[in-house]
Length: 358
Image (tube, rainbow, N blue to C red; front, side, top):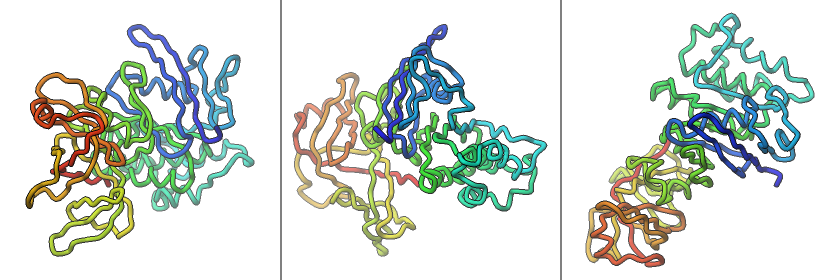
């Protein structure tokens, strides 16, 4: 397939084995997520060519970077790398840092240039400064720009925001999204931060103990009833893509359209028609088998069907619902018994809280 990244790696280390096989879209932002020690950075090193997996396979669109008898070294792969530390050259100005990789890229291979990268990343005011005069967030924007100016076919980012505070992260994330929008450069982004996942991700890869626990569109992966252990109880839930349908000025609410159904959230400063991603925690969803008989304080009630029932154990159970996209509800096992839920059964999902993802 033309726009596909095909990767297959097996690496054996003392006490750890990486064994992954992935076919990912070579576009958008693919987030590699998992707990510490799950193999995220090792996978990225294999993708970059810093590690050579025996009998590994790596193909990007129509280019073969690794296969039987083939191993293209990192400097010939057209890969951009951004690490947790900016790693800027302290003796060079910001403009000189940005041009370092650009000047080492053959002119016929340059498809990105200084002016457009500076504009997209908002670097114009920084060009004549020294790296030690920049904030952590500014340094990371420069590091991203330097990587982009090598005109990479693939941009690899290894926890690039991990050392930054929440304010600096909030400043940089829109720039990362804009990279893909403006330049169409596919990004593989490693993180263990769910907040970063929700804001950035198109495709999600979840690693656990060196293996792929699940991968695919974030809306499907995030609501998998089998992933409680990996995602963690505080993050388990649904990611929904909605659009702003209107604003209720009197009650300071924003109406969202979700596949023909309506959700109400606190008023957002977003124009009608704009997209908004929301996160619904599984514990904030309760279920009924019939519509409410009278007025209820819950504003958001979606019609759905039971898709899957999670493993029974302890006092609670995860229920995957199909509302056109997956939604997850965590209810007690007693409630499951009282409702007598079965796959395919119509239900009403009462949503008590919704988190906006900006």
